[in-house]
Amino acid sequence: MASITDCVVEGLKYPFNDIKKLLGCGVLFALMSAISVFIGAKSFDIFRTTIHIVENTTGSLSQVPFSQLPAGDIYLVAGLAIIGFIISLFIFGYQYNIVKFSIDKKEDLPGFSDILGMFIKGIKYFIVTVAYNIIPMLVLIGAIVLVGDSSMLMVIFLVSAVLFIIAYFLLVMALNNMIAYDSIKKAFDLREIIDNIANLGWGKYIGIILFTIIVYMIIMVAVSFILSLITGVFIAVVSNQAFIISIFIAIIEGLFVDSYGTLFFNRVCGSIYRESIK
Image 1: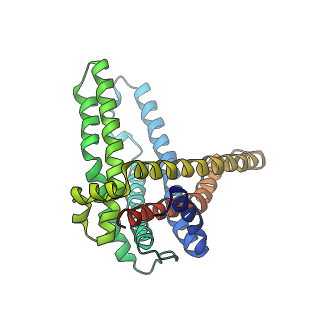
Image 2: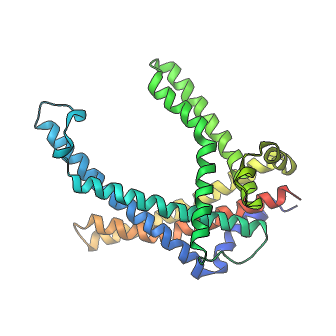
Image 3: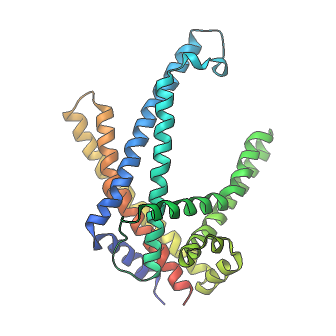
């Protein structure tokens, strides 16, 4: 049985097996990053306009008529959000394929020829992710909406956080189980999921996921530091172009960093499942 370090090291090397496909995945993340920057900028403009209207009227924020808001910006944000969600489904579908390749011990990276297949797999991935997080999310929403006592609110927040953690560790194996059988029903076969985790060992299972997350975070922090230096250089050279700089950095991060991190993490997830069924 492979050690935690072996699985992580193999995952770190995996994205470099095909640079073209790594960059192909990076294009999806670059698009997502660019869209996020546009949405953030336009949302800030909408918020600023709304505050300006409130300050010049006697009404409250909720009483501002839609006709006075920048409708063009609102529709643009909504349209970009829809496009971003569709792209995220393709990303989920590609993650699905990465895990499948890992389970099958394939050394190459998934291709992009089956676009419809990626989209359908992305929908399955999204549905399972939402399903496993729905209970802690409802607890959190209930705490915010229904509870007025601040001390009780903190307790429910802690309960929600614990539920999110439990859901996450179950979700990783649930997604793997679904992908291994290519059946969404297998994502909810809790007996098989728990048996797979027990077969690997709860300590090793939790340990390898935590270790992978730590390695991932170290990579992201290191790259973020480098990108911050690049940003500083751009600010010194290109003055009063914050938006352009933000777009450039977002594209670079999506193209190289996010794609690498996603391939690495999902490769390790597939390895975890492969070890659990031995």
